[in-house]
Length: 173
Picture 1 (tube, rainbow, N blue to C red):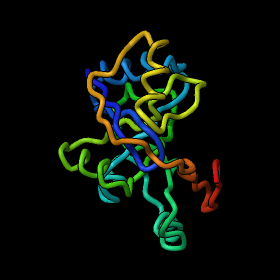
Picture 2 (picture 1 turned 180 degrees about the vertical axis):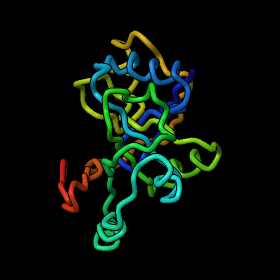
Picture 3 (picture 1 turned 30 degrees about the vertical axis):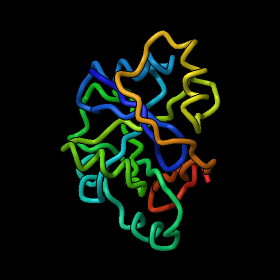
Picture 4 (picture 1 turned 135 degrees about the vertical axis):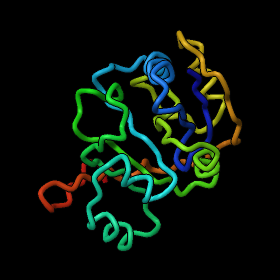
């Protein structure tokens, strides 16, 4: 049921086993996040993405046209997604990270990881452990492990794309 705070390609994030319900609940409790707000997942490659979200050929086209940009895709969920994970949603947000540390984590396990920012709900993203620890004074639940990646450069969050009826819809650019 553990959660890990770690550096990502954008800010400090939380990783947890999507199949471990206690870890899912701890992620929500840690962030003080409304259970009606879904969590995203990260997977190690596009083959794993296809297992958890319904693949669409436009995904490859979007990535090919924007090789430097990070994308999270909102896809119809496949049966491999645990039924208790985001149960009120027929879709799931999935990303294949480009950040070496995130990929290293994913290569250590054979399951997707919850991917959300390591901040309390409604508060700013953290780019250093100092700012993260300052926020944690208000947290009711603490992470099980914190990995110090130093001060991270500010980067915009990934673009969020949904493909609906063959049309590309940017939910966040």
